[in-house]
Length: 106
Image (cartoon, rainbow, N blue to C red; front, side, top):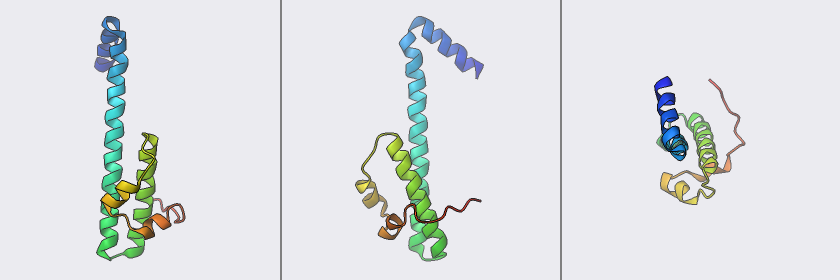
């Protein structure tokens, strides 16, 4: 970690604005990675629900995954979810129960 810190210090001495640009880039990359992971969780849960086995488990999992995905999207500025609901095939029964299902922690 000190190597990165030393590099950022050197960059700031030469071009102060470049130091924050590097950090901003890392933050954006982390946001994209987090959003991608949340989307994969939704896809898995919706597929499990559509498979028809362990229905209650997958319904709860899908609701929790979709809620987390929507929160991630809103944190980075995406306020509308209509398109991703259609693209990911999120069933109405999942959307209707958002926030209503108890969260089961492992």
